[in-house]
Image 1: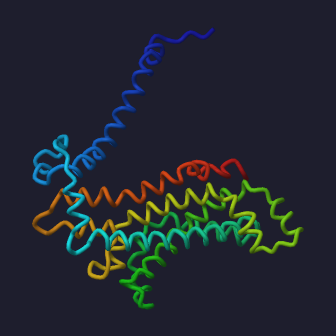
Image 2 (image 1 turned 60 degrees about the horizontal axis):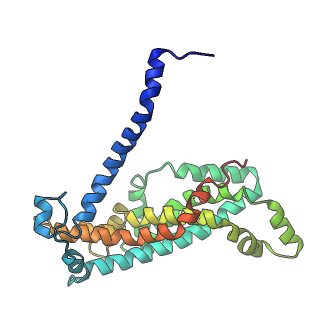
Length: 285
């Protein structure tokens, strides 16, 4: 029997204490900003700057009411624009990514592998790098300061990620199902929508959550493409609610809290399929 050295034995005795302490420290780092954001939503505005980490005693809903009843309807306009942009972008991305991923996986040709490689290369390009060329292209087609232009930008930039997720999960679906449907007389379009796509629910949930959160939280692209005077989303709405010389911190925290609710609801509805969609196809060749 191999005997441990005294130093190794001491490290083994300390290990059960080190991991919980490290986990507690990391959890605290992530919890403190969340705590500050939540307590300041229901705290009086003057107390936020003086005591940002204190408990909200007594709690108040004045900040939320002030945001919902603004004369310029900034929150409602921002919420509507975000819902339209995020909804259209995610739906189009999901359909295009699923169809393209299915075709690239099932074709198996050499050029499909080249296309897949090019799409994966697109994941490595930050959106800020191509923002200036994109604005030139959108200006040429008169799509700047329009919701359609922002939706097209989202579709073009995020489709590689959707194809990556769907193609990985597609490899776990037996091709015999499609062959059996083809023998029964179903065409390619019907095979995809009635046989393949219903089996892609976990991957679809992952794509919806990831892309929905990314597009919903996007700040720079809506600010540049929509323009500060033509439209706003929930993220740019928070930016516009802060003045040059003063800021109502209560309204800012309330708007941030209200802006997170749709994404939180989306995750809670789809979280059952979330992990399965990410790990699907991980062990398939």
